[in-house]
Image (cartoon, rainbow, N blue to C red; front, side, top):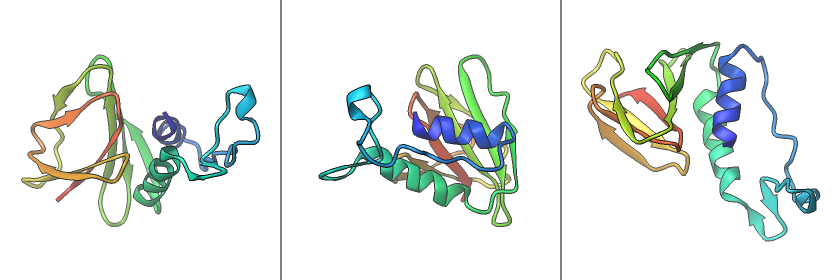
Length: 130
Protein backbone atom coordinates (compact mmCIF):
# COMPACT_ATOMS: atom_id res chain seq x y z
CA UNK A 1 0.00 0.00 0.00
CA UNK A 2 3.01 2.32 0.30
CA UNK A 3 2.89 3.26 -3.40
CA UNK A 4 -0.87 3.86 -3.22
CA UNK A 5 -0.46 6.18 -0.24
CA UNK A 6 2.55 7.94 -1.75
CA UNK A 7 0.94 8.59 -5.15
CA UNK A 8 -2.42 9.58 -3.65
CA UNK A 9 -0.78 12.12 -1.33
CA UNK A 10 1.12 13.72 -4.21
CA UNK A 11 -1.71 13.33 -6.74
CA UNK A 12 -4.15 15.11 -4.45
CA UNK A 13 -1.89 18.14 -4.12
CA UNK A 14 0.62 17.32 -1.41
CA UNK A 15 4.00 18.93 -2.03
CA UNK A 16 5.95 16.24 -0.18
CA UNK A 17 5.35 12.68 0.99
CA UNK A 18 7.50 10.99 3.59
CA UNK A 19 7.51 7.54 5.11
CA UNK A 20 8.34 8.20 8.75
CA UNK A 21 8.64 4.51 9.67
CA UNK A 22 12.08 3.59 8.33
CA UNK A 23 13.00 0.93 10.89
CA UNK A 24 11.21 -1.72 12.91
CA UNK A 25 11.28 0.09 16.25
CA UNK A 26 7.44 0.11 16.40
CA UNK A 27 6.81 -3.37 14.95
CA UNK A 28 5.30 -4.51 18.29
CA UNK A 29 2.53 -1.96 17.60
CA UNK A 30 1.95 -3.31 14.08
CA UNK A 31 4.08 -0.72 12.27
CA UNK A 32 6.87 -2.47 10.36
CA UNK A 33 9.43 -0.21 8.75
CA UNK A 34 11.12 -0.05 5.38
CA UNK A 35 14.13 -1.81 6.94
CA UNK A 36 14.38 -4.62 9.45
CA UNK A 37 17.47 -5.67 11.39
CA UNK A 38 18.22 -8.12 8.56
CA UNK A 39 17.97 -5.50 5.80
CA UNK A 40 15.45 -3.85 3.47
CA UNK A 41 11.89 -5.13 3.28
CA UNK A 42 10.12 -5.39 -0.11
CA UNK A 43 8.31 -2.11 0.65
CA UNK A 44 11.69 -0.33 0.65
CA UNK A 45 12.16 -1.30 -3.00
CA UNK A 46 8.67 -0.12 -4.00
CA UNK A 47 9.22 3.15 -2.09
CA UNK A 48 12.51 3.65 -3.95
CA UNK A 49 10.92 2.94 -7.35
CA UNK A 50 8.07 5.38 -6.63
CA UNK A 51 10.59 8.04 -5.67
CA UNK A 52 12.60 7.47 -8.83
CA UNK A 53 9.55 7.49 -11.10
CA UNK A 54 8.06 10.63 -9.52
CA UNK A 55 11.30 12.56 -9.05
CA UNK A 56 10.87 15.90 -10.80
CA UNK A 57 7.08 15.65 -11.13
CA UNK A 58 5.50 19.08 -11.08
CA UNK A 59 1.81 18.27 -11.11
CA UNK A 60 -0.47 15.36 -10.27
CA UNK A 61 -3.93 14.84 -11.75
CA UNK A 62 -6.51 12.27 -10.66
CA UNK A 63 -7.62 10.00 -13.50
CA UNK A 64 -11.21 8.92 -14.16
CA UNK A 65 -10.78 5.33 -15.35
CA UNK A 66 -13.98 3.73 -14.15
CA UNK A 67 -15.41 2.14 -11.04
CA UNK A 68 -12.87 0.59 -8.67
CA UNK A 69 -9.89 1.79 -10.73
CA UNK A 70 -7.64 4.46 -9.23
CA UNK A 71 -4.85 6.39 -10.85
CA UNK A 72 -2.89 9.58 -11.17
CA UNK A 73 -1.01 11.26 -14.00
CA UNK A 74 2.18 13.06 -13.00
CA UNK A 75 3.76 15.60 -15.35
CA UNK A 76 7.55 15.61 -15.73
CA UNK A 77 9.88 17.28 -18.22
CA UNK A 78 10.74 13.81 -19.58
CA UNK A 79 7.05 12.94 -20.11
CA UNK A 80 4.06 11.80 -18.09
CA UNK A 81 4.14 9.01 -15.52
CA UNK A 82 0.89 7.29 -14.60
CA UNK A 83 0.31 5.22 -11.46
CA UNK A 84 -2.75 2.98 -11.64
CA UNK A 85 -4.31 0.15 -9.59
CA UNK A 86 -7.73 -1.52 -9.42
CA UNK A 87 -9.86 -3.65 -7.13
CA UNK A 88 -9.99 -6.50 -9.66
CA UNK A 89 -7.64 -7.41 -12.51
CA UNK A 90 -8.67 -5.54 -15.65
CA UNK A 91 -7.22 -3.71 -18.65
CA UNK A 92 -7.26 0.03 -19.20
CA UNK A 93 -6.59 2.32 -22.13
CA UNK A 94 -4.47 5.48 -21.90
CA UNK A 95 -3.83 8.07 -24.61
CA UNK A 96 -0.04 8.07 -24.46
CA UNK A 97 0.61 9.41 -27.95
CA UNK A 98 2.76 6.38 -28.82
CA UNK A 99 2.17 2.82 -29.90
CA UNK A 100 3.72 1.27 -26.79
CA UNK A 101 3.47 1.61 -23.03
CA UNK A 102 6.26 0.77 -20.59
CA UNK A 103 4.70 -0.78 -17.49
CA UNK A 104 6.81 -1.10 -14.33
CA UNK A 105 5.57 -3.01 -11.29
CA UNK A 106 6.40 -2.17 -7.67
CA UNK A 107 9.27 -4.66 -7.67
CA UNK A 108 10.92 -3.05 -10.70
CA UNK A 109 9.82 -5.61 -13.30
CA UNK A 110 8.97 -4.12 -16.69
CA UNK A 111 6.81 -5.06 -19.66
CA UNK A 112 5.95 -3.41 -22.97
CA UNK A 113 2.29 -3.44 -23.96
CA UNK A 114 -0.26 -1.62 -26.07
CA UNK A 115 -1.53 1.60 -24.42
CA UNK A 116 -5.02 0.37 -25.37
CA UNK A 117 -4.80 -2.78 -23.20
CA UNK A 118 -2.68 -2.11 -20.12
CA UNK A 119 -3.18 -4.76 -17.43
CA UNK A 120 -3.82 -3.42 -13.91
CA UNK A 121 -4.64 -5.08 -10.59
CA UNK A 122 -4.54 -4.38 -6.86
CA UNK A 123 -0.78 -3.92 -7.07
CA UNK A 124 0.03 -0.45 -8.48
CA UNK A 125 1.92 -0.11 -11.76
CA UNK A 126 3.84 2.82 -13.22
CA UNK A 127 3.02 3.52 -16.88
CA UNK A 128 5.06 5.63 -19.30
CA UNK A 129 5.03 6.17 -23.06
CA UNK A 130 7.65 4.02 -24.78
